[in-house]
Image 1 (cartoon, rainbow over the protein chains, first blue to last red):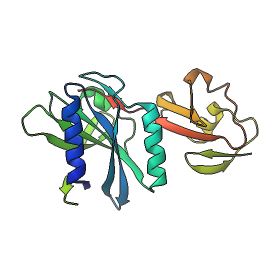
Image 2 (image 1 turned 90 degrees about the horizontal axis):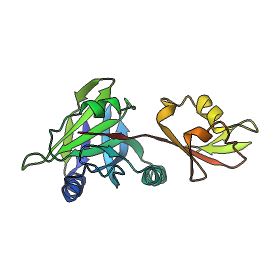
Image 3 (image 1 turned 120 degrees about the vertical axis):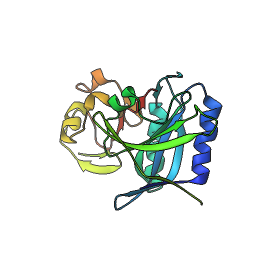
Image 4 (image 1 turned 45 degrees about the vertical axis):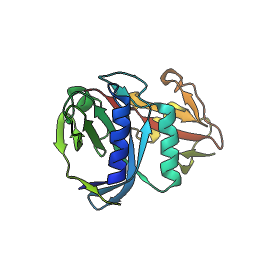
Amino acid sequence: MISLKQSDYEKIVAHAKSEAPIEACGLIAGELSGSDKIIKKVYILTNIDHAEEHFTLDPREQLQAVKDMRAEGLTPLGNWHSHPVSPSRPSEEDKRLAYDSSASYLILSLMDEEPVLNSFHIEGDKAEKENLVITQE
Amino acid sequence: MVIKVAGNQKEVAEGLTVAQLIVDENVETPQYVTVTVNDDFVEQGQFEGTVLHEGDTVEFLYFMGGGQ
């Protein structure tokens, strides 16, 4: 199970909508509890590709986020990005560029009126949906 | 000498290069790793020639990207 606070979910959706049709992206950090992941903080980073079909996290902002996680005692848990006009599932490129099999990859689809957010475990060319739970504060 | 790697103090040999540190740290997919030394980004082509010094702070940043 991977949990995300409602306010952090809304933060991701709001930013992704503001960036559309450009893909939005960021990092997630929190705590590990057994096999569960608890997202405590969502980071919004710049997509340096500034593209509608690609994203790359800004390395300078990534460095600052990593330092912030360390300062706050948080564990890096993975990343998130948006699919402005396609479903919430990893593309072939998402799978090819998912180098960390311990990470969770959150994908927000904005293709329908109601946003859809899913979390995936990606290993090689296999992507498995994780049990994402949105929690109240 | 002592350097800091990903927030942890580490005793390493004098004259250690970034390339050697990547091997020592068992960095996965090093071709997709960005390295900073004291917050300065080190180009991939400079890994072999970048010698670390006492008190340096090194971070490994893994490439994160994709596309729809």
